[in-house]
Length: 170
Image 1: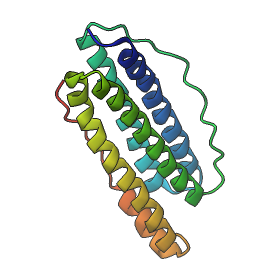
Image 2 (image 1 turned 180 degrees about the horizontal axis):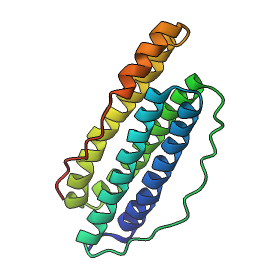
Image 3 (image 1 turned 45 degrees about the vertical axis):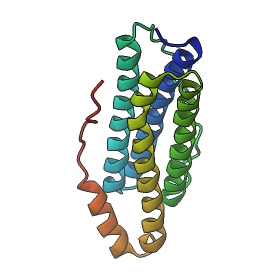
Image 4 (image 1 turned 30 degrees about the vertical axis):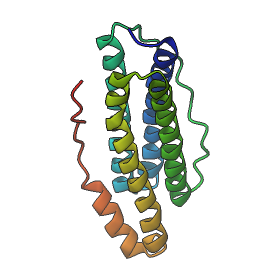
């Protein structure tokens, strides 16, 4: 049986991950609307990843005999003003999610909940990769976004991304 506070944080994370998927679908739709289909694809895949992250948290809670509590997923509050601004918001959001994961890890660490810490290790690593990917997108857009040919190439690169499910074993 898991600690009550850890369960509460894990349940909250389920909803945060679904919110992240919703947010990234909103980003994806924006890019498709302005004919940057590669960027749209990239964020659609991000949304799939976030949904799968939520499902991993659900499975972990269920595997430990805990009740899963789903809350309302709020409409994304980010104002979609430009292709470049969305990338910066994506990075900011990944940094926020990293903080959430660290808070759960800290709560588990404080009570020596090694099983939850081991489960979260994958997410800690994943968040490092997510922040790096988001930061690289911002930097590439800053380098290439003002040049139509370069933007076309970057969009094509992002359009080639394919979804791969996470390989975390619970």
